[in-house]
Structures are given as structure tokens and as C-alpha cells.
Amino acid sequence: MTEALAQAILANLLIRTILAFKRLIWISRCDNNANWEKSRGISTSMKQSKLKSDPNDRYSEDAADNRYGISNSTT
Image (cartoon, rainbow, N blue to C red; front, top):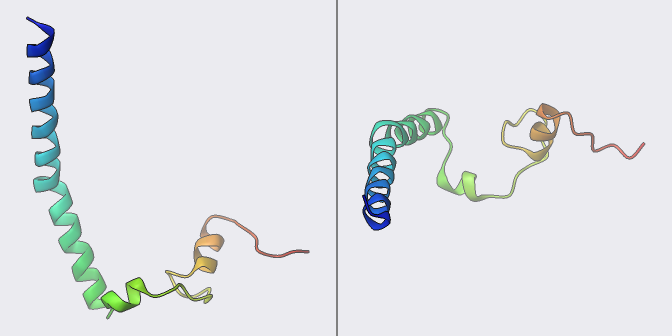
């Protein structure tokens, strides 16, 4: 088998893997995420707006900091 043939086979395998992942996993995940956002009244403009500093807001920077144990205090 030549190197060019091996590369062509591997490239084809990679493309098929990516397309299968998109079809079997990614599209379903995106649909589920869109339904979740819709059920909670999350609009496109809300997703594009700047994050608030509300620790109870799942999307705020403070909430993310709290999840990952990052302290914003200067003491």
C-alpha cells in the first residue's frame, strides 16, 4: 500500500467519523439544548447579552467562579 493510498483511506475514515458524530450525537444534543433553553424562556438576545453578577444566575460569572472555587475577594 502506498503512502498516498493510506492517507486517502485515513482521510476518508476521519470524514466518515466526523459526519457520524454530527448525525448521531451533535444534532440531537443541539436539539435537546434548544428545547431546554426554550422551556426556561432563554432568548437569543439573553444569550448574547453581557453576563450579570448574580450568584443565583446559572450563567453569571460569579456563579461560574463559585462552581470552580475561584474567589473574587481581595482580602
